Image (cartoon, rainbow, N blue to C red; front, top):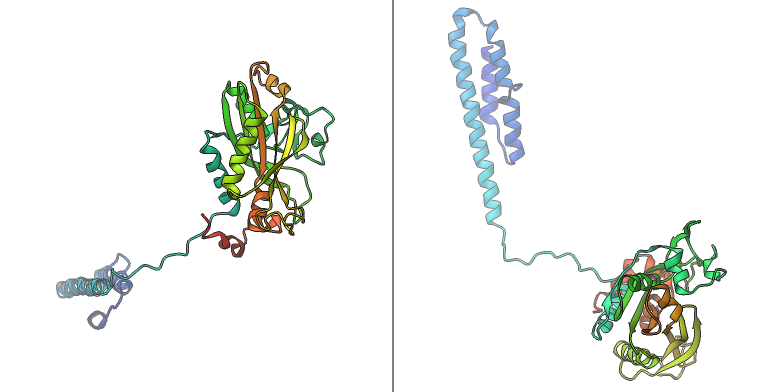
Length: 340
């Protein structure tokens, strides 16, 4: 027993620690309940009575030495850690993570929102899951309109029809149901159509639609609003033209083109050598749509327009594949890091 104690004492005296973990390992080995020294006290009962006084004194001395040794080890590694901290130059610049970039769709959407906010339009958003009334019927779509077919729309339920909205025009209906004129709002959001995915089309895309309803609103107001938008977005030198078109929810309806800002109207790949690029559809709100929303068409008139953000972004940045917007390829996205 005495030889065992002397061996343990020699181990304790020779123990060295360079790291906090090594000091903690010393404590666990010698001083915890299941450590070496407590186990010696457990064997104390086997010592002959006449030797217990002598061995008790030796064991207590061993325990005190072990405790003192642990304190010395702990203080030494703590001093070393403090010294390492003192050696750190806190004035050195940090290693910053590289900054990310905004998505090109977000960049263009925010630019459009800012332009329309300057002339009094507020932002309104609606749900992406809609019913037939808000998405089709209230907007003057006839019962057998192709857009109501399964091959054009993602239906979630039938009878009643619940679907993923095909345009943000459904948000216009909700706004007109909730608010009486004057209404001057834009409706940015994501929409869904059951289309084959290719370089030029996708089943998910983004729109910004606008609505202005008040007394004596005319097509002149529509044209001046869109002239302002085109010049702010594409530059003061851009030329604008309107072409007659058809939409169920506007009458009269038009599509708006701008002169190609890449070739200056001379003809190029982007404008398909016409000198013009189509950017939006628009028109005067059909009186039936106003009536469906409990707005008196005899008193109020209004205009609406819709812009496809992907198409606008592709033209602006000469992007030839719409799928790039949805693939989260960092090599593509980081090209827009410096765009504001």
